[in-house]
Image 1 (cartoon, one colour):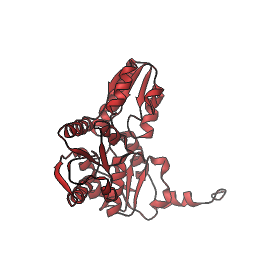
Image 2 (cartoon, helix red, strand yellow):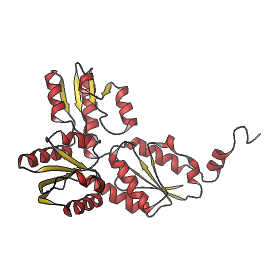
Image 3 (cartoon, one colour):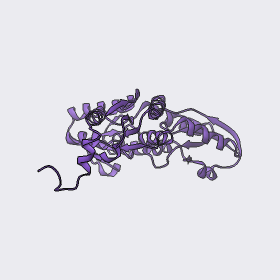
Image 4 (cartoon, helix red, strand yellow):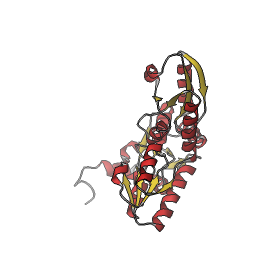
Amino acid sequence: MKVVVAEKCGFCHGVKNAISVAEQVLAEKNDVYSLGPIIHNRDEVEQLANIGLKTVGKVEEIQSGTVLIRSHGAAPEQIAKLREKGLNIVDATCILVKRVQHIASELEKDGYKVVIIGEENHPEVRAVMGCAKDVVVIADESDLHKLPQNAKLGVVCQTTQSPEHFGKMLGAIGRGGFSELKVINTLCKEAIKRQESAVQLCKQVDIMFVLGGLESANTRRLAELCKKYNSETFHLQNWNELDKNILLGKNIAGVTAGASTPEWIIAEFVKNLEAFDNCNDVRANMEPPGKGGG
């Protein structure tokens, strides 16, 4: 099968940095924890676990050692609790996420009601919410009722949202009642490049694969965008999740990957897909057990 890989895909700078920091700390320390998965990729997290990284959900679960602040960041309150415990803190927060946190804090100081366009339960958004006292999170237009009337609104966006969604939500907010509206573009340029590259590719292929963790916001966004232009789009975590029957009748496959998807996952998927024989492999896969040669 012919396979085309998106020009921009895979690890972004923030994720590369987080993995590099984790590997360096693990080489030097024994008792190392990550407050939440360091990135949203199960396979990579498992690899780091194999060399000693312990992932926990709460500060209370850590009694001693070194704590990694993951790429999505952590709320100031969480970091303060870690310091109170006397733990060694190593910060692997993406610099763009740190920027959103700083902007949210400054907006509140300047008297604005902080509004985040994004997913309320995503760890990046939760960390930003911790940087201001009273934050409103708007996922879509159904959340607009949360906005206070005639208020000074300071709007930022989850870094991995698409420009289209950001623009759509700003238009919806702008049609509401407010006394002042200040908007700061906090979108990640690398995420945008990956979105543009994926959309361009998915229009040219028979079937499109988006590789990455199912809990990864930027990977889900890639899959959603590709699905708009190619209904034969599939979000998979790795090659093992592929149902080969969906390849029947397909000649050209496109592959992209989220910013937290390691290169080895992409390489393995592409290699197996290129080796796929559209006739023989699908026939073998569809044959009932016990049937076949002999």
